[in-house]
Length: 311
Image (tube, rainbow, N blue to C red; front, top):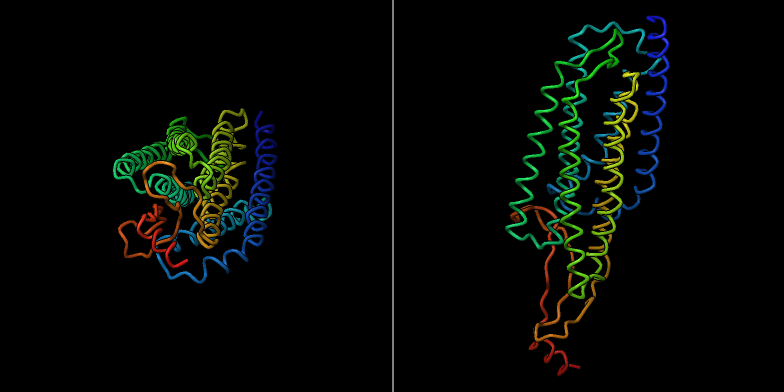
């Protein structure tokens, strides 16, 4: 039985490494694919919180995965001699990096919701409370589960407590909550006649594919802990980092493309209200939110009359 366990561990280690290498390769490919957009839309912008978050989301997961691949290499790892304490510190490093990346991506997705709700104070408070709850639950789940994690002599996780599912559940619930807010606003926009505005369409489109990707990779990662061979639990870990990174910087780049595009009125109202233009932009760091801001630009009747007179 012990011999079979060794075989399972070796096989799982090889599968984990190949999966991690594939996740890193996929992320690198997409970074190269979108590098021209980074140069065009991000480089010229002055430094701000949102620009720093963009670079963090885009490149930190890359370096985290490189470090994981170095330690988890089937060729290099057997040459190391890890103590249980060293393995514990290694897990703390991975957990801390993961939480930080998740929080950064959540920040971007929160900005996406703010953009739809025009920084509505009530929505902002509700989202912030939900976000704080998610972070508390994630940290609690990880802190409680870390002492229960068991390692082999190569620092490969051989057992993890089901308390870790608290971390997974918090992430899934928050992503579902944000997507629900996006969907509600989109339905209202269609009902009110401005569901085809560029920002609404973009946010709904990006929100949909981002939610599906994040939900799938988180559920997939959690389900692996139920596999009989616990050494397979980390197969999707690097994919988790790559997908979160991909969703975060892709959402920001798409918003940058929209903000750089020519802005035109997208819908004129047929009521007594003034026509409006629905646009998006990145505001400077000295603003209250230092983040993506969405607003209506009213075009008054007086301005319209002056334009007519000039014409």
